[in-house]
Amino acid sequence: MRILVVEDEKKIADFVKRGLREEGYAVDVAHDGKEGYLLASANDYDVIILDLMLPQMDGVTVCKKLREAKVESPIIMLTAKDTVQDKVTGLDSGADDYMAKPFSFEELLARIRAALRKKEARGATRLQAADLIMDLINHKVTRGGREIELTAKEYALLEYLMRNAGTIITRTMISEHVWDIDFDTFTNVIDVYISYLRNKIDHGYKKKLIHTVRGRGYLLKA
Ligand code: CA
Image (spheres, rainbow, N blue to C red):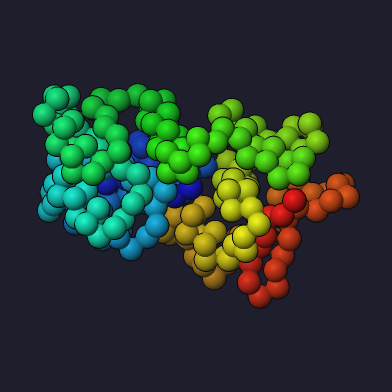
């Protein structure tokens, strides 16, 4: 899951970025509205966190322009003012949710999860492929009832594969959704993480779930 944070207050941007990365999300940061708009229209973000008061272009304008450009990523608007008018303006411009500063990180995480669920429009709380189950609420993965310990990055990669089960996923798609903009696509990090996952998910099981599609990418299939 890749998230864009558009926030000019460096302290808040750094705090949110660090926290989200620890949770396994890929995070890009833009420090003004214009940069935010450009990044959001160039990349397919799973969630956008957008501050209302921004230099260059304010949050409402960014939001409106993105919706006009048919960017449909869920947008959570941040603002210093918790007034009804701000909320209405934000939601009217096409934002999906609204949070007043100061906010707790836990609440931000909960709202991101809600936005992701809304995006799927399925309200899924778990993903399943054969006997592999991912509990999206508690971040727990089991295979055949046995719990599997994953790092945040392994979890994020597996989640992306499971959400797209049955579809061939290219390395570019993985790098765009699981890693962030600083990711060097020429390294073999993705292959290394796939092999970590294979060791944990498939090793010792007769039925393999992660498949390599030569020259194209990877496929998770029950
Ligand atoms: Ca601001």
